[in-house]
Image 1 (tube, rainbow, N blue to C red):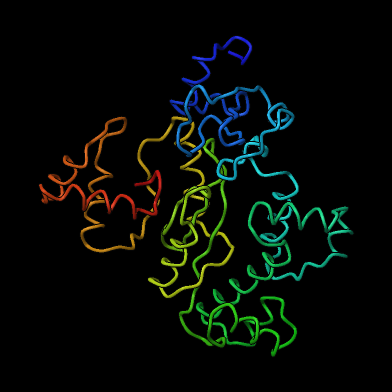
Image 2: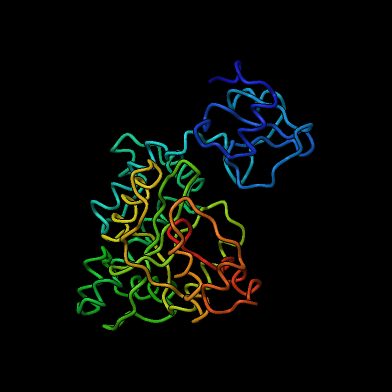
Length: 315
């Protein structure tokens, strides 16, 4: 169905149920805030009387609405722009390379466009992303047994002093042959918006929608609790969870197999494991969950554990 065939009541039902099948086909403008959103925006449901519906983002913009900062409706469809994908592929193909503006121009890429699109998606420039990726590579090599000089050269640093300064700024300590391995963060796309995943070579630590509140706080907490910095990069775990999430959103997967690393108290971990036993398509109340974890009067406690879960969808 199209917007032209939907009544106002039917269109409102779409955003009320957060029907992702209308993503890119239906947009809601909220008169009381002046903002327009996607159907599945995580923001609070507006009153029906305050809603105007549009079939395209440009229509909403022309009507005077501004794009929501949580669901980014003007950026639909949800997949990253082709240029961003291409830039990420360049870095992953040669993570040790120092990418400069001349290199991008040689590939017919405008540096200012690359900078703008990359910053819009990741909050940092392409050059900063590539630099952090090289530092992550250096830390991985050090952890794997390489000496400092080897790690420096494999990460594309010709200057020993420059490498030590950059490494010290990122990790808070000079490079050394130790186990100071970073956690690696990557951004995936989903029908509900961009998702970030944090993992290492062995397990998945975080899956969160980028529109979630306090995301920076959760990231900082994870870094502190693990004693590891978080830098851009991918591991086989990234590829595994990416494939599983794609299958999940297509309806072909109900149970995830990616190994997890839960960071929390014993009670939180017990609650999260109980959440994972809820059969697909069923719901439990907090009271049900509290009983299951052996704390019948702990509904508020399990609610708090839910709020601190950083493995969205997976748990």
